[in-house]
Length: 373
Ligand SMILES: [Zn+2]
Image (cartoon, rainbow, N blue to C red; front, side, top):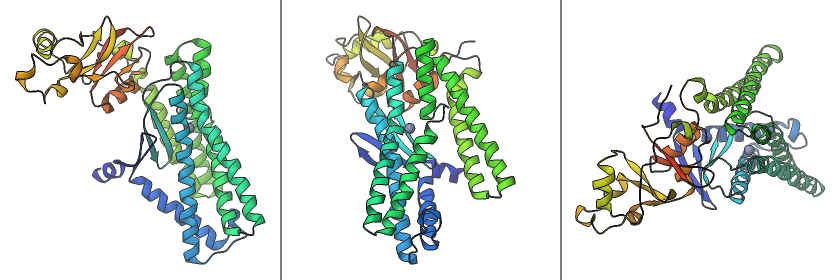
């Protein structure tokens, strides 16, 4: 178990236009495996590399170079989701590259179906574009008699085509599932219901992949592909169920259903006023900072620890609070699972809930989620 946890621990490898890029240790295993498979193919001259046969050293170099291209393709796909999100006014928490592809964690749900649609199609569009560019370069390399480069480029081109098409399958959280969700959301006007149906699609596709994998094993005697399909199926099943999960019980499903009262303090109040008049009554780790129901930030006890007691009287709340930012509030319709994820990573351990007109309507506090029947 500890070994498993070690392999899942994430490390940050880069920061691209302000977004942390993380990988976990399993990624190295998959990278090495991919480089090895591609190198072997270059050595033996199989399907995509049939016109080339390289010596072992050159084959390994080609394997590593091609694999870098494959992972850059995934990264480019994710980055275009993140950039499309930025255009829609939504920041990204992180881009994670995991063994089965990538993931862009947006700081909150899109505001409307149109934004959801645009962010979802940005990824596959980029992959299609990369495929076209790689095919063009492949033909150029062929004309220039650079056969090894042409073979590597053809692998990258087909891989991008595969990423684009497979991500368009209509099951949440795949991109196609997000497109479906945007469509359902626009049609029925309810994000939670749209999410539920789209992630049901995700589970159906995941189940089909597992069945397909087993069939491959039995009929086609292709254990490698079979195992791969089953693993991807299980991974997708897990991801889709995590979205649907909260609905299974009788507990709250959205931030609006789980929130507690919007306990708040004015930005111009002093810290000692907050401690005597707010904290004394409401013993909680964080409160909203608001004036007239407009959110200014979140004040956590954690932030006050470094402030010496003798300065409580002169320090204003607004000078020690966390100013309002993308990762400090959600809408009442945000799925609870997503809100909890955000709350666990934003450093405050709390989230304000703000309705469509921009009014503060509630608070979510880690460990204090209201579980009503
Ligand atoms: Zn995508």
